[in-house]
Every structure is written in C-alpha cells, then in structure tokens.
Amino acid sequence: MTKTKVNPYEVQGEINYDRLIKEFGIKKIDKELLTRIKKITGEIHPYLRREIFFAHRDLEKLLDAYESGQKFFLYTGCGPSGPIHLGHYSVWSFVKWLQDKFDVELWFQFTDDEKFLYLKNKTYEEIQDWTKQNMLDVAALGFNPEKTHFLIDTKHADIMYPEAIRVAKKITFSTIKASFGFTDSNNIGSIFYTAMQTVPIFLPNVLNKKSEYCLIPLAIDQDPHFRISRDVVQKLGHKKPTILHAKFMSPLTGATGKSSSSNSSKTILMTDSPSTIKTKINKYAFSGGQETTEEHRKKGGNTETDVACQWLKYFEWDDEKLEKIYKEYSSGKLLSGEVKAILIEKINGILSEHQERRKDAENQLDKFIFKS
Ligand code: TRP
Image (cartoon, rainbow, N blue to C red; front, side, top):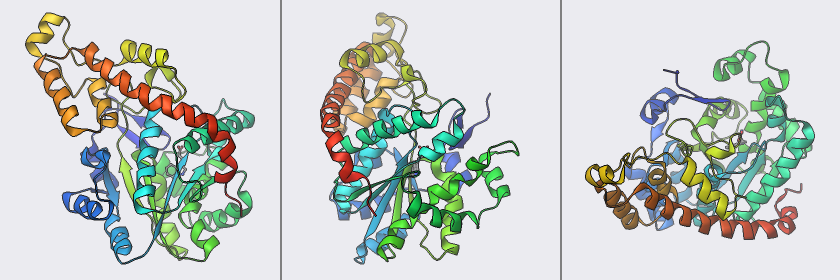
C-alpha cells in the first residue's frame, strides 16, 4: 500500500480525514460551531452540513470577533498551471457564499511564481497564459468586484516583496524541508515561496492600517504552508489567520487522491461542453453498481464508492432529493446510468451558466485586479 501523503506538492494514497485532523492538529467543525454560523448567515451551506468543509483552526476566535462587531476578510488562492475544474469551483463557490453572507472583502492570490518555480515543464509564458485564463474563471464565479481583489505574485511584487522578506527572515530552510519533504536539490525559489503565500494574511491590514482577522478557506493540502505562516505572522505582530479545511473532491475514476487539472479525463473542466461532460461521466465515473442489471436490482449499488453519488453531494443541494437518490440507488431501483444522467444534467446546468458569465468576465478583470 502506498503511504498517505498530504501536502501542497503531493497528495497520495487513501486519505483518512479523521486521522488527518489528528496529524495536522486541527479541529472538526462541530454542531455548536454550525449553530453559531447559522445564527449569522441564516442557513447552513450544504458543504458544511455534508462535512465537505469539515475542519478548522481558530474558527471560534473569528466568530467571537465578528459577533462583537469586528469585520474580517477572506483570503484564498489559485496556482495557475492548468484549467480550472469542478474541484476548484466547489471550494470557490463556498468562498462566494461566505463573502455574500458575511459581506466581507476577498483577497484572491494567483501564484504564478509558485507554479513557475515548481513545475519543470512549464515556461514563464505558459504560466502567464494560465493566470489570465484562471482569472476569467474566478471572475465568472460572480464575486463582488467592489469587494474582491486579485493579487498576482509577479505583478504585485512592489507591495508583496517587502512583506515577503520580513516573513522569509523568520523561516529556516530546515522548517521548509521538514514541512514539504524538500532536499538540498530543490531550487531556491521554491524554498522561499511559502513567504509569498503568507503575505496576503496581513497585507490588507498593512495597506489599510487595520488589524482585521483573516479567514482562509482551502483544500486541506494547503494547510502545511499556513502552519508555518501562523507562527511567523504572530512574531511579526499580526493576527494568526483562521482556516477552514475542505476535503478533496474525488477524481471521476475513483476514491483516492484529488481532482487534478493535469489529467483532464479524471475531472470536469469549467470549459467542457455538454457532450464532453456526458462522455467523461459515462465513460470514466467509477460505478458502485453491480455487474448486471439483474444483480443490481437484487443487491443495489454502493453510494460510498459510486462517484456519481459522491459528486451529487456537491451539486444537488436539496437534502431530500439527495437522500431519495441514495435510497433508490442502494435498493437497486436506480441504475448507475440513471444516477449518472442526474449528475450530467446538474453539471450541465452549472457549467452553461458559468460559461456565459465567463464570456463577460474579460471586461471585468480590470475591476478585480488590485490597484495600489
Ligand atoms: N498554493 C495554492 C495552489 O497551488 C494557491 C494558493 C495561494 C492558495 N494562496 C492560497 C490556496 C490560499 C488556498 C488558500 O493552488
């Protein structure tokens, strides 16, 4: 069996999220916290109900502050090295919900430096191209342009670099080695990079001469960066950020690892056409059904291993409808192909709207890119 690894540069093996909570020293989002969130937002997002966003660091502190009238800002990011897929989309659609419900600013970092430094086969120009393409998708998610600021590491170096060196001075090479499994042969840019990902935790406060809390929603593989950041920013006189951790959306082909843009048959891209979506799901989505229809009717399917069932947790937000699908699939009334058809229709709806908005996004980018 392959050893489980979860860090920004490697996700490998069967992931046990309860074990990760212990290993990472994070906390599960419990009922009490959900109740507190609901008091503010009026509803519990399905991703919270369904434990897709399942863990946190210091969420209590952030809610205490918010309840006592203090604002916070959101910070998340994108490593622009390929097309945006539904795994990214689901995390960011939750970020949008947070922005709308809490009515807060969002700082969105595009780490073109990171992707250039880490990926052997990509040129600087290719990464710039992906940065542009990815910004269009993020803009198309419908964030409030008045309250959303894109930071592009190489383009905003004038405001970011002075802060990054303050951070870098407090991180040793041995910490980076231990956190990411680096050796002496990693390039020196990649060793520095965590400093850049740390900066947006406090940059808005430096720019606006404020001291607001920062909330970072992320997929759990990004946590190791911020474990380092949390120590360092405090030493620099800033507040430790609050973090919300999401599980990975499983690849179409089965339960381990995470969706990735580097293998486009394993996931659905935001730019896929209805016929591509249909083909990919019918051809690649791992089925939890039985070999033959007859057997399936008798024994029923497995909703836990069936990728279409699992993906519906992300896209069918009506609990009753989802439960009905699960029940009928487990009992054998619904066939794999029928669940896939439900998923295809859901995704088609989401993507056709996204693709419309993406066409307009070009005119919006200028509003989103931060001007200092
Ligand atoms: N490193 C992330 C990636 O490769 C991008 C990123 C930058 C990020 N800042 C972030 C992700 C903050 C989550 C939260 O995708």
